[in-house]
Image (tube, rainbow, N blue to C red; front, side, top):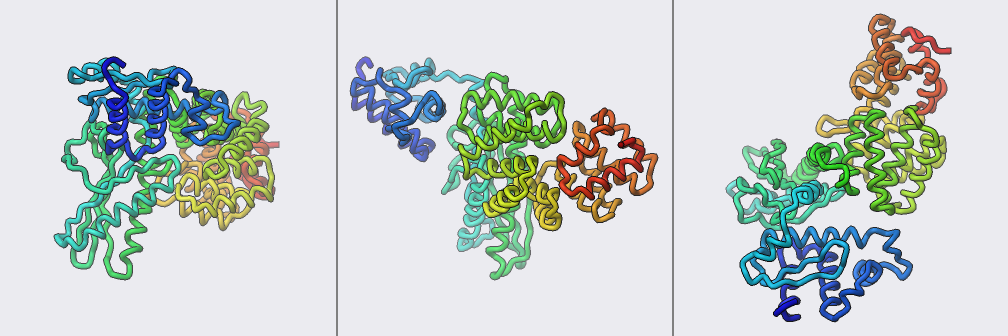
Length: 529
């Protein structure tokens, strides 16, 4: 430790934990103080994952750091936090604190020459910075009041606060509070990610004109400086509808930006595809899963499975990872993907494990609904579906999933109503939802509407789109176009004639509807026994 005194080191810890970007991270500050105190007390070489789990994370005496990776995860976050701090605000601090990988014992160095030890220890690692930038962190700046009336400041601030509340309902998104507008110019935000503390910035303004209100909202990337999205909302204004306007626009903005298929996750998903496979952690595997949900195919399912398995190895107690693996196994069984032996049982195994690990997670509960659906556990299915709906689902993907499966299990009117709510024009959602809406019209003998919905089932790697289109065209006696869809179907699923009842029956729980779809396919020219 050279000439550094204990007071020098403790002062440095206090300096770090008082930093604007650090002080909100209470658990990591507690972690840092614990390992520093233990080292100064001469017990640095005795710091273990078990003691950190007990003393810092509040785990019980039965805590096993070999089975629970929580300590390693927080240690990694603390190392990244220290790196970003010393690369920015702490570059000229008198003491450098460093926790080497493979150890929880910190090292202390005097930074007597400007930045010399900071530059040596905290070098910029491109791969690590990329991974850090993939974290789904968002901050909402207090909106600008452009009305010219300072008494309307409360309304501008209320909008940003309402959007913040709506965004916190999305489990994968981390929302960082911003109580005042930063002093830096918003036109100069490139590479200010460490200072802001969030990858994405939501900014906006309000204007009033002749009893109308105009709200401008935009999404900025704190790494590239690019504006990723902007929208202007205009509403008629009255005292009575003020709160309703705030809630309506805030919910719409949150869905557009924060849902699994919203702009934030689409941006991160595209970037994660460029990260080397050996750098994938839990969240990057989750991004890959959401990409799979939007572009399903057997080949993509295999790639996503390997990434999720790698993430499960690193964090075996992640309920969400188990739930996503359950989804892939369930899809493999239901869609009859190649090499799906054992998929039925493995889906149940992972879904049950996910429910034990994280019973309050919306996504885990929704995948459990899917498990009950595929396993024909009717009573449990409806009970679990109702439980999910009681959780006030906001994500179009999650809400629509419940509507999709309710419809196919026979609760068509309620399922269709939920799907209509999830599939509004302002949000992204999985295109396979159109499979249920197509079948809704098909069972009502509205074959033209069924065909139009089937056209929207535009997922190139799946056979359901051409199968629904072929059946609808068959019922409409449009045989030439129906044969084109049959050719497409057979290209995607060569054994579709032999397995037609099996393939349809995996999803459609009404026997009469299955027979009706088969009838349409036969009219289209398929030879189904």
